[in-house]
Image (cartoon, rainbow, N blue to C red):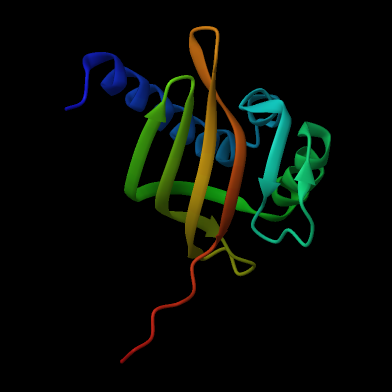
Length: 138
């Protein structure tokens, strides 16, 4: 059974994820930076190496901010498991961006995020986010 505290923590983590999507849409670099710990580890959408630390994370984030013009997002499915001051979050999402022809395109994402409680708030300390393969027509 989930306690009220776990429900509040899950809601805070979900709001944090939504806030990060919104920060990318607003192109709010500082909000993106604050949304990740200084010792962040993981893989971003097109990572070819293990990303280590916020400065390394922000190099790729800057490319994304310069390249994509996000318009909206939707979390399609999410599962949050809290383990004391750590949490593991699995989610599927749609992210809509303006394409080169100014038409809107959707990008399907899947992610495993790791969150750590810092004081009275949660912050992302790791992630593996990637593009979902297109579904086959079969």
